[in-house]
Length: 286
Figure 1 (cartoon, rainbow, N blue to C red):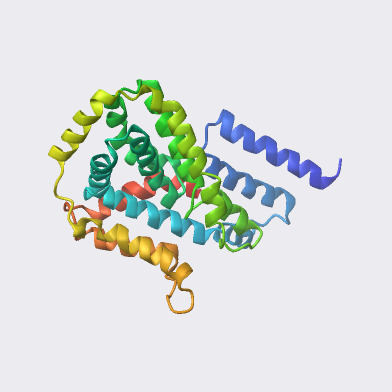
Figure 2: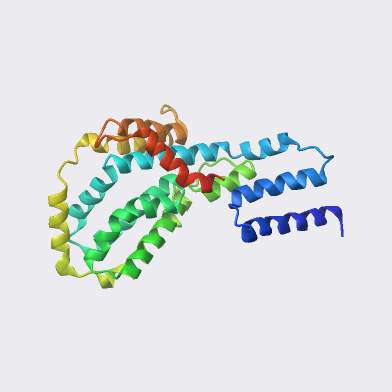
């Protein structure tokens, strides 16, 4: 057995033991395994430079995820997500087909901008779940509806962590993936949601859901939607007009949106939102 193969097998064994037996997080297990292999395979030194170079290779991806999750937590706390869901129900609620498609996109939205399906489930998924049950979907079907839409949201653009990770490893810029990712996620998401939920929708309950949504809202001013509009413009502008529209890149785009959201809607604690967002996205970043 060659030395390289021996160290590869040792690395695999140590990683499995730490993850499966010791129940360590995957990110911490990978880091510990890397340190062990460096000590055994090297000249006895820790070679901190190798660890730093490896981790900093994905610094841009980590910044995108942190900024996106902070933005999501702030617009969730200031009421934008709830108001957006309410407005969509009022606009599309008279057609079960249109309503289920719109709710699918709403659930996908947090995953699309954070690259994490957890953000979709805990964000808009928690808002949409009671609505799906009220429409007549059984609990298990509503759960499957939200879970599938969240996974497709994780795949959809503008942020796909898997593609970013692969690109970072082979020095491939994250450019031009929007259309392929959209075509590989949105049609399947809509089909899956309709397949799961359409037959369970009770049409006699649509009017009740619409009226309740109208009674709950009504305060959706333009200012409340401003952060979402600005983020959309900053994402689309550089691609639509590359010669004169400067590209702020995704981390700054999300931070600008988060800053605007602090002055619209309900008053929020930015530090608390930032801590909660980083805590949720930390396993993905790791």
